Image 1 (cartoon, one colour):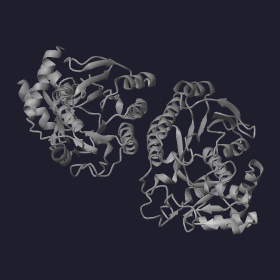
Image 2 (tube, each protein chain N blue to C red):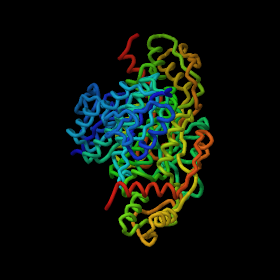
Image 3 (cartoon, rainbow over the protein chains, first blue to last red):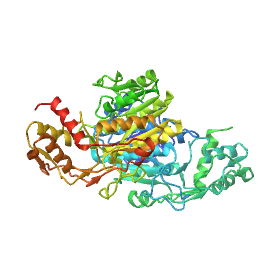
Length: 304
Length: 304
């Protein structure tokens, strides 16, 4: 029994990877477009540079997937917010959509970001999908503009389209410099584990759950933007203390010791009514357990 | 004396053509990227397909223009509103911007559209550049999304950027099926000249004036969106009657005889404060004279 064939772009990446097993379990014939195969062996691997117009189009023409889950984008930690490469990924995404439409694809799901929203109220309330959008970064603008064009285009082409607005993710295989990864690695090494302003609240979601939610979103026929998040805010302080506790080295945790990045807005949380009620994803998240899994990953994969 | 070198994409097109002489007069070294040379011989012609990534990039790298006036887009009359080719032009425009930035260009001016605005109030008042934007066509969305990404990108790259939001143009060399052209051609041929709902009001600007305004905008250092229009609304009825009068055949004019296209909103006019006060363009438009010029063009260029 197959629900159709899905091409997961960036299928070996941080988010894409975690969509593969849930997609396969749901009966999809899974294909991966990436620069390296998936580490769990799920899905048929297609080596392709999506920034190359010919390679990208040829893949779609040859494969003719019924579904695309487009996870690929350049999110190099520390520079992606305002990197010119964001333009290249707008271009690559629109080309992918054009090729998909010309091959009579059925459903396209892309990845958006909480950075599309207007946060000028400092995050006073959880964001709903129909709230005001006003990105302040090139990344946020590139994602929003891409979604707006795709929405208009796929509506005309009568292709089903959804846009998963991702909030803050953590978990195995995340970039080593990000909050949870950097603290976990420091704690494992017995070094001081620093983080920025502890009061800052984000909607932290384990990446495994985000992958499962995206697989459900792809299988559904829900249209338009859908927040992919937990609906619950957690302070950086809470994350830091949990990591200290799990590692048995709470003494190494140094909250507020990391200067630099201005943490605005204070709060970024999602209203997840659409994800729960329309997509049917119910996330029972044990934050401690998810942080333990992240910690275990770094214990296996790195000894500094 | 040269103010720099300007590459006019679509320089042999309906709008681009009319920017060439004013740009040359202002001291710019004018280059044209198009599929055919300009008909007035102004500007150095570069045969290039801007939809081809390599051709486009090579042109910028070789030419290294200080300015770009990007007029090229697919606006095939009768189909461009929701044509998939709009995506190709978003792609081509972002690639052009990338290449321009990597060659240290100074100023980029692109062409937007009144279709970017929210007209759901039926056009109750003239639109200002900071009014709500909510396109209902793929064309309008593609233009808006392109502008939003370019604005964020050029701000980071410290390249000066403006976006000329074009309203309704008419004049020599317009597509034969458009309002003024089709009526002028019918009247010249001694045939019934039909148009749609006569009460509909648009901000009709002679294309020669739009070209002059764009040349001034390019030379200025005004940033962001700027309406390119007259600031005055004219009903289709008025246009039709003037054409009938000019041709000496008012008896052939059949207002409201053209069914089909729903003319909403009733009114589309521009607030042109920015164009007048910041760019310094003062347009004294004699509508009758401009319509005569359009009529003369078709008398010379077509006998049906």
